[in-house]
Length: 163
Image (cartoon, rainbow, N blue to C red; front, side):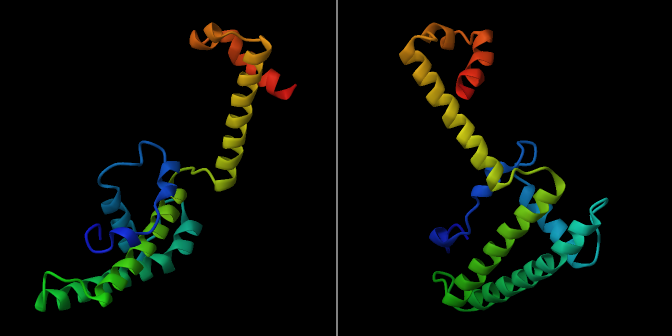
C-alpha cells in the first residue's frame, strides 16, 4: 500500500491516542488475528458487547482482504510493474476498513481518549502557557523558577490560570 497508494492511505492520526505499550511493530498482526477471530464468531474475553459491535466490521474487513488477494492475483498474471485501478480501489477500501477496525479494537481493549478529551487537554495546555507568559510579564514568576522546575510553581500556575 505504501508503494501503490501512498497518497491515498487512510489517516492514522488516532494512533497517537494509543498508550505506548500498545504501539509496536506486530500490532497489525494482532489486529488481523482479532479480526479473523471475530469474523469467525469468537468473542473477546469480558468484552461481549464490543465483540458483537465489531463483528460486522471484522467480516467486511476479511471480505475486503479477499478482494485485495483477487486483485493481486489478477495483477500478477498480467503486468507486475503497473497497478490497475481495480487493485488500487481494493487497497484503498481495505486500508480504510483496517484503520476503522484498528481504532475500534484498540479502543475496546484499552482506554483511549476521545477527540473531546484531547480538545479539552489542549485548551488547558494553552491556558497554562498563556498564564505562564503573563505571569513572567507581570513579574509573578521568574525564568529561573521555570528552568529549575520550582515545586511551588506546579501549584502556582493552575491557581494563576483560575484567577
